[in-house]
Image (cartoon, rainbow, N blue to C red; front, top):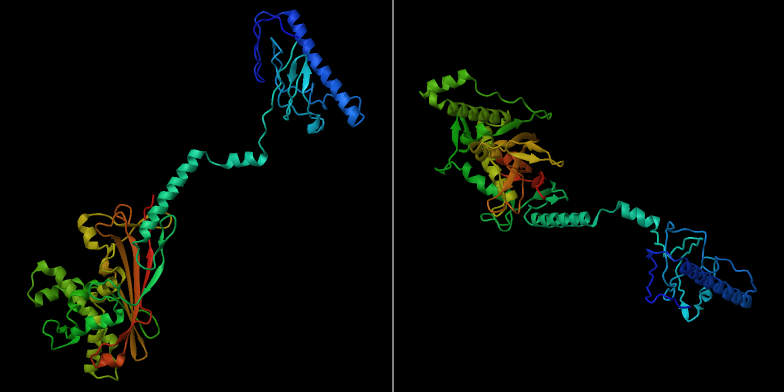
Length: 458
């Protein structure tokens, strides 16, 4: 049946076309057409089922039409023409198979049916449109969506992780041997050095033990006018002792393992007596205190090495030999082996921080800054003990390092920040050789280093 309206309008599945001027006659015609569609569908369904299954009373569910389900709230809707309306994507909900989907014709018009669920509601005054319901997401998908950060957040996280990874890779190229980093920039690790680096300028690939022996032996030769040993208050010591003994730290251990009491610093009366005896002015009081301190350490060393079964000359020779190992020169050789000439790290010193009036700090593994005293060689601690006829010298040397000029980017630290490079070793001295004025040493464990601190990676 053709509509008397000269203009035909296409009706979308999701649209409702409303007429400003309701026409009762046209509405009745439209209702009759829709009812004819439904009746024809039912009739063909009955014929189909009677031929296949012998069923004569198909339900609305078998036709895929559910008149009881409301997907959208009913609203006044006017359909102007059914001539060009096509029912698409309709799937029966009553368990029928694909073969049940047919093309139903009304006059010269055909209604196509395809496989998707739909429902039509009808009432005396309202006709609802055919709607394809949205597919609901699975619960697992919903859970994933709720726990996943927005795409922009994930992208930002990836970019930050990428930059951090690149920075860590760059730092690792310039770290000393044995050092390692975690993803937060925390520095850790230990290493044992027995030789100098291959690219060391003075001692390439040389054994540390041999270098120490080579560098200290000239200070024991009495015939060398430049390096000849000298007596401090009657005790013969290496020439470096007068300059180093007062600013380094010494401990003497008894045979039972206890550390002897620390020697007290010179008092005011002792300093005054020294100034008067040498006719020195008050301006050199500090120097006088240092001279007296060096003499104190010299006497303590002679007392420690003296053996009642040895001659005074043998005891003097032993004190002289051991004094060569108790100077700053040993600390310099240890740091040269650990840091190297071409290292991007340099040892932070109290002098460089004192004059610049800056507070040096190190970061712990939680990122908290902790003030430190970068004393450089002033932090050296020598502990001297006996082992039978021989001697043992334990060296504890906590140092702090910062980036050398030109390596600030490769060694990123916080402002006035340092990292910890703790050096330690044990030197064994042959007692028989020392009593004859000869230096014979071994380093059983080499030079051990432990790293600490935190780099700035973000």
